[in-house]
Length: 263
Image (cartoon, helix red, strand yellow):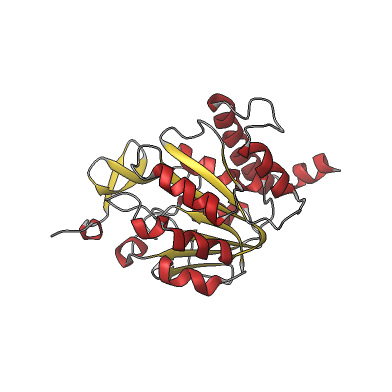
């Protein structure tokens, strides 16, 4: 019987964009051919809101390469960060040149590995962990198990952050949230309405009594409180994600202007 991994990745060029699909019409990743580093999809911009919690992560680990949108963006616009991407499929990695994904270097590498088996090896070494490991069948159960989430928590440094992309219509959505809350002692929250059916969930590895930027923000979004007006409402959150991404691009493209403004 065919499995989700039997679906070969499909590339389609249309209207100046390149898409990666595992099944026709089901877009996994999308790139603007005129601006390869632009984050086209709303959920990718939403996941980049991790910089509100962790503005200068030393080590970012991503589960799932896809078309490399997040990997490319972080590589270019977070120059202080080291980035490791864990990808199960060799045929997806083979498409890296098509999507203008940078070559491996001292601060960027793609590892052909099963993230479930590899996660325990990362113990206490990760500042931000991004989970986006979908295939043709959706989110594999192994990437949403209680054991995997516990391994993810152990992979994070103290004050580290996990960000996961989950579909709201997944029949196991509620179960996954409960597992995350259990693994992270309840330090879990979302930005409402930020990416349609994609629910971007943030989980924080927090020590008891710890008061940090990430801990403070997590406490506020977990209770739908707000350091910014409108944090509990979709339109404001989508605008927030656009603002975060635009700010990172501006800081990288015009560093002298940003430094002057910060004085």
